[in-house]
Length: 241
Image (cartoon, rainbow, N blue to C red; front, top):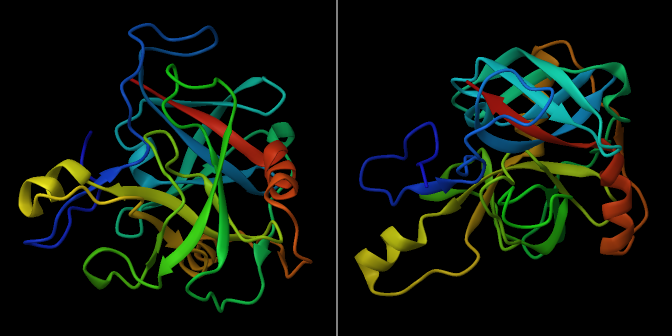
């Protein structure tokens, strides 16, 4: 599993990127070229979607699949390697925009939901929902642009939304801790140490690129209801070479 981009600080255990699994040698119908990797994205405004920079890095083309199963092209409009974010131009019928949380205050222990496409070709071809908590208000080596979360993350989840229990976006899934490397250093395998770019960082990136997402603070819902909110807006992405 490749390491996350940008590289971790010197001496830090590298997190593993959550969106670059191995892919089948042939591209599915409707693509252009070989599928190099897969990931997740989500609609943030009409004709605009958000994902991770490392999901689209090195792609000659990007294709998306909507919740209705339609294959469509996507085009990279802007990227931020440091934050590991990328803005995509997508067809207007790709899905309805998700809403970001208006209140930026996130507390340790808050319940969160992830929604995306882990391990494409091995697990379900449809999206997967996982639940967990905000474990820490900073990421690896005290990275203030990220949260540490306990919700399980696998290759293919990168770029997917991290949602609160109202169904509002509070982050963007980015990586998981490299458990194998940590085990080599400590003799113990860490459990559920994963990371997401903070929603405030994603909002700043979008606004700098003239995208103004909707903001709201809603009522508490069940995880199943949050998944139903996310479903029509979350996209399966293929990086083509």
